Each structure stands twice: as structure tokens, then as C-alpha cells.
Length: 571
Image (cartoon, rainbow, N blue to C red; front, top):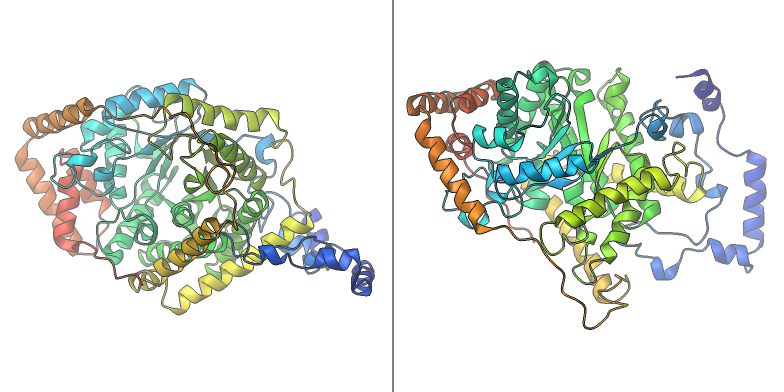
């Protein structure tokens, strides 16, 4: 702690007792006056704003943050508890990483998209995989055929992974891969692709999402039951801690929980409950917290309510710092810093008047920057209809660049600190999230809360309450339930050419024909034996990739041992 922080920590609060007492007397003395009326909670917003459980007052004063202690609760940027930011200078030293989530069709077509985005000024890559890849199926599997390349790129083999990153310097470009159930396999393919180009794992930079628990409650792209899935996630964390120290082995995701309909407080609480499960599984693998925690990254969802989103990122940092230090005994400051990617809210995109989504994404981007995130991708204005066009991707990237260079948002650190409203929201969100985490822990942890269906029910109820408010007109969605127009012009949408699917199937058939079947069979048998034991699964998965086994074959071998997950009935 710096000398300045220590000095601030000796102060009991932000305001003198005399000033607070005077304000309190004035407030209570005007019971019928304008100040008292202003301080009343707004009855028409008693349920909170969109996907929120907060009760917002008409006016905030020092009384709302009377217990706030600067040293304990805020501190300075780059210092515990990191409420004000994870770096001392934040964007004055370096802007956030600008990414756009991209991928479709074949690896060759997606490689062209990546090169285009890098030429436009994007500073990192974010890979979207198609549904068969996310579910561990090869493109020619009967379960996959209708979805090949439709919502992301089809990756069946090491050859596909090498094509996807052809001409892209793997030791200089940071790559984020949004993949969960088969995360270990995709990471292995990326590692081996690097090996073949002379880039060792120790030099790779990027992130694999590897957060399968949120799949059971928010997305549905799971394969194995929660127990083996958490084991795989922890194996990736353990392997990366020792072999790929620049790689983020897990990106714990609140994004999909929020897009499934949760409140902001639930987004924090459920995400941190899931994080606890991964942390404790990694500890059980023999790691110390400080060995792996510096490479835990996060992804959260930025929605439309500007001030709540700013407060959310501040609350996230403070809550994680306290949890890492107090619960897990972290001593390395890097273990206590929550570094997060933010994607603007996909569920806030509307098919009606889609150009309005450009405005929504711009406001959400400004909130994420004001909240102090480390990486941003925008959901494009046409994504409510289909995969984004090149024009939509370019507008999304330019939006980030405008916020960075034209708004002044990056000029100072944590610009809304000290706002009665924002500090009060920060406290409220942290308090609600802690209560949710305690409730999950009382059930036996995240896995138990998921297996019982409780977590899914909580999100479904929050989503239903929000939709009910929209349907009844209590929440205005511009262009949807108000300010509608007739005769809107049809929107040009992107579609995947069927020719690309045929090319992918032909490439997969050729890959199988040219490899050595005996080497594949031997590697898959070794993987199944490892699954039946308790050794780290990354080494046998890497061997299977080197032998040219496909994604579907590797996941299929693990399916034989672990089985497939069947969800509980959600009531």
C-alpha cells in the first residue's frame, strides 16, 4: 500500500460527521419539502430498471455513501482492492485491446475475415466456433450437418487450426477462443499449430474460455456431466500455469448468464460462484492459488443502463480482490486483480430498426471504458438477424476507436469515482452479489446449484420478470414496444454459402485419408485410459492432436468414459 493510500485509510469516511449530521437534519426537517420528495424512492421504478434488481432513488447525497472508506473500499488505481482499476495509469498508459468476435464457414474464409479486421486496426482476435465444434462433433457427424459453419468457423482437425491462423504471427497476436466443453482440445490444436511454426507454448498469448459451468445454466453447449467438465477445466489451468504462462487458461463468463436474462447482481454472484468451483478444483490438483490466479481472466456483459454497468465493473474488481485475499490467501497482487473482457449485450440487440443497435453498442462501450475493462468487443448492429456483415464489423470497430480517441473517456482513471449515485450502486451490487454467492455456497457450491436446477430457475425467473415489464410497457425498448415505424426497409443480412460446407466435408475426408490410422487409434486408447484415472488430460489430448485425431474423435473418446450430461427439469 502506498503512503497516500495509508493516509487515506486512516480517514473514517469521505465526509466529516458534522457535515453528514447537518445533511441528515436538513433532510428530515423538510418532510414535506422538495428535498424529502426528491429523496423518496421512485414508485414507478420500484422493480428496478432493465434486468436489474436495484431500487433507484431520485436523488443521491453523501448520506447514501456515509460508510464508504476511501482506503478500505476504493484505494488508488493499481492498488488493493482495485475498485478504481487494475493499472495505475489505465488507458493513459495503454488502451484496451480492441477485438471483434468473428468466424464463419471454413477456416480459410475465417482467416480472410481475421486479416481484414487486423488491417482495420483490430488489436486482438476473438474466434467464434460453429455449434458442432462447440459440442465436440465433426462436421460430417449426423448431429452436425445442418449447422456446419453457420454461427462460427468449423474446426475439425489440426489442419483446420493451422489454416485458420495462416500468416498470422501467433507469438505477437493475442487470440481469444470462445470454446468451453471442448476447450482442452481446441487449446491443444492451437498449441500444436504453434509448435509446427516454431512458436512454443510458452510464447503463445491469448485466452481459452474454458468455462463450462455457465453452459449448463445459460447456453447449452455442454458435453460431459459437470464433474468431469470441471476436472478438464482444472487440468487446462494446471497445464497452462506450468507450460504456457502467458496464456489465460480460463475466462470465467458472466456474459452468457446476463444474456440469458439474469440481473446484474446475479451475473456477478453466479459467475463468482462458478469461479470458486474452478479455483477449488485447481487447488485440488496441487496448485497454489498464486500459481494460477494471475492467469484467470473474465468476460462480462455490458447492457444499456450506463451507470449500473460502470458500478458493476467497479464492484467486480473489489469483490474479487477481497475474495482472493481473504478466502484464498493470495499474496501476489496479480492474483487479486480482475482483468476482464467486455462484450456489448447481444440480448439488447433488436431486429426492429436495427440501426438503433449502433447507438446501444456505443453507449455500452462507453460504459465499459468508464468502468475500466481491459478488452472490448461489440455485438454488431445486424447480429439480431444473422452473422455480422463486413460493414457492421467495421462500424463496431470504429465505434471503439471513436470512444478511445474522440470522447475523452480514456483521459483519466475511474472518472465517476466519488459520484454518490455510482458509489451507492457499486455498494448495492456488491452486497447483493455476496448474498447470492452465500446462497449458492449453502447449497454445496455451484455444481450442486446447477445439478438441482436452482441456478437455472433463478435466471429464468429474472428473464421472465424483465420480459413481462417489456410486454406491459413498463420498460421501453425503442422501436419494439414504443416509437415504432411502419414500412421499415429490409436489412441486408449475411448468409453462409453452402459451397463452404461442402468444402469443409471434403477437407475432413481428405484429412482422415492421409493420416496414419494406427497412430490415431493408439492415441485415443491412451486418452481413454487417462480419463479413467486422475492424471492431467492435456498431455494425452496433445498426443491425440499430434497423431491427427479429429475433434469429434477426441471428444468421442472422452464421452465413452465420462458419459453425456442430461439436464434436470427446470420448473
